[in-house]
Image 1 (tube, rainbow, N blue to C red):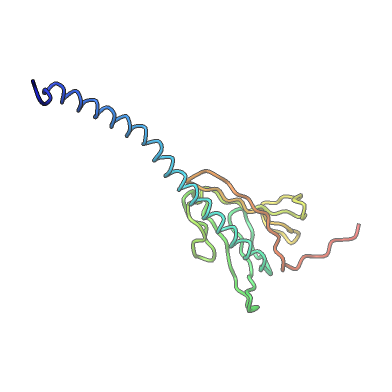
Image 2: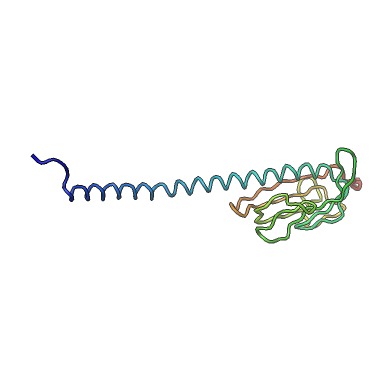
Length: 167
């Protein structure tokens, strides 16, 4: 009676185990890539939401806008202590460059950033720059990593608007 395995049997078993391991690794690669992509998407969305939350607070305290264009807005900010500060929100227009709030990065990973100005609260009367008639500002932010876009319409609360003529 023979005990043990032959060399051919051992090589065959090792080959089968190798094929099984290789196929398992190949099938796990897309799962790992999916997890990495989901984490990147969640991070990009979190950054965008934080930026929008900050912008909502900023726009609620604007008292005067001195300059407003498609990638820049310069305004006077009124803090809780009733102190006025000159602030600016700018983006260079180059994908990958950060969105800057008064010289400090508000968010990075910016694929596109646009400001649109509307003369009426219902979103009518689009303009590419701020005017004394502006009532609503639309902020659009696109993530470079995911390509997802978020938009938010904000109304500067403390800006002194001209009275509308009676109809």
